[in-house]
Length: 220
Length: 220
DNA sequence: TAATTATTCAATAATTCTATTGAATAATTA
DNA sequence: TAATTATTCAATAGAATTATTGAATAATTA
Image (cartoon, rainbow over the protein chains, first blue to last red):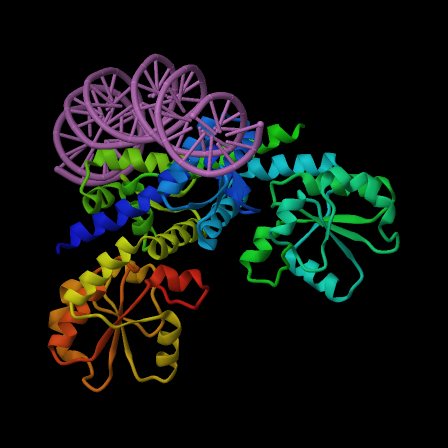
């Protein structure tokens, strides 16, 4: 076997992965599936594209073995094929965050406008939880909470937040997290909490980042 | 600012990165630049494409801010724009290695044929170096060694290996490393060393992986 | 069995990406 | 200044990717 041949094989295998990633909808799909598995229709709805189109993108991802399927009745549930798929997305996202001032500015503008400027890191969250002087809220949809969440976190999906604010202890600050750094659920939650006089921060990253650090997590 | 708008901005920024990566030649360029900076001509030669074509690919990478340039005389030197760029490539590569049995089989077939089946991890290398009972060889081109190498490693580019084997101590095993897991310099070196009766292994990964773990390294 | 539902497939036109060619640019040397 | 060199630009044709449409499939329910 020639050197050249080997190299070509290896690169042509890897380029299949990058081509499958090279589309904005497919990146969004990976970000969504990092939270929990989803049907084709759910994905089409969240991406605001036709079902046929969503299916087409999912086929592309499946072809590259980035996602896998599980059939249940006449639903097909898609999930990430591997934890390493999330790590690729995460490294891309981290590069994007650092590199493109535009993204940071966009996020910052949004956060300032929401008065939820303060955000804390996963390490800071761990320390505060250890000292038992915070409440941790998971404001993602319940399905995503059930698929995996930070221990001690309470599930309060955005649509139920207003009705459940009253039940929160007034003496402890609240840390809110959601899907990831680009997810705005947590920003909106922090805004609502602060309006009710509750001290609140958002977690910079999201649950998949917690999980990717091999920190313990709860399910269901 | 609407939720939708923000999301779209963020994803459209990130998709620029993935599109820039989605080409076999551009992946190879990133792998090459992870070793040391290079001129357009050097890249064109190593990729075996026309200079205009190499320049075009480099412009694409530059547009995505994955690489940056430095002008010297009438040469333009390209380099990776950021350490994080290597981390993206590394996570992609790791996913590919795990996921595609084909790649592993291809590499394994090649290594078996070269009789250099044994390879060791970076952690094992560190331990062996600590015990001072190994010789570490960097068989990449000298320019890449000068741009950064594992401490204690001797620079023995492939083309000088045969003439320098005699000078190596016979009583210590040799660990050879090169650019990365797909690089075959180390395989060939191990084969040559073993033929001369010297015990030799290859390092599974390459220098950029050592560097990306924030381990100390030497330059020039 | 027929109707319904979720998903996939197939064909198409519009768009984007690619390699090639040769000319243009910018820095250096004669 | 003219010639040389490394790189980039611009135009182009061919190839690949995309969203859309409507039909086909496969699992379920009536």
